Image 1 (tube, rainbow, N blue to C red):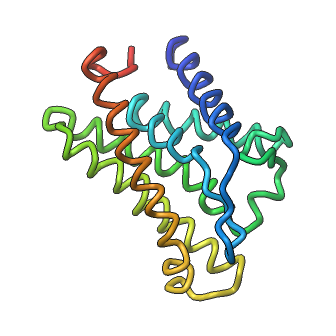
Image 2 (image 1 turned 90 degrees about the vertical axis):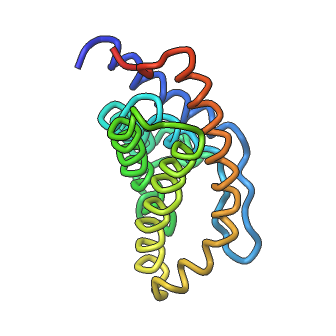
Length: 181
């Protein structure tokens, strides 16, 4: 890892903190917030690659665990990882890794559609797979019930996928190798 990687890791952790300034929208009846921060994890993976993208999210999550109020709504502290959304928080790092890995693996075949598919897979399928599993455990419901309850959130995440895809393609046009050394 070189200095450039470390700077980008810190920069994207900061970006996730900035995205936390957007107030969360809490869904009625669920109490779970819709935030913009998951887009930061998607973007980190897409632009920094698997390792650096995941590390940027891990750095952000360590700061949250240490008590910094960096999550949307000013949340922070280790306790947020034990609540119903804890699986989604940890899933951000896995999501960034998967997106970065797939972007790198299929780099020679990337176009708008493939980037949408990769970001949707990592940012929705993988993230909700992990997040819903934790919701099911934390709230003591079935995995199916957790998945059904998460459908309204997936609509917002689908919009984030398209926004992140647009940003990713714009950056890749300017920096074809991505934000890598």
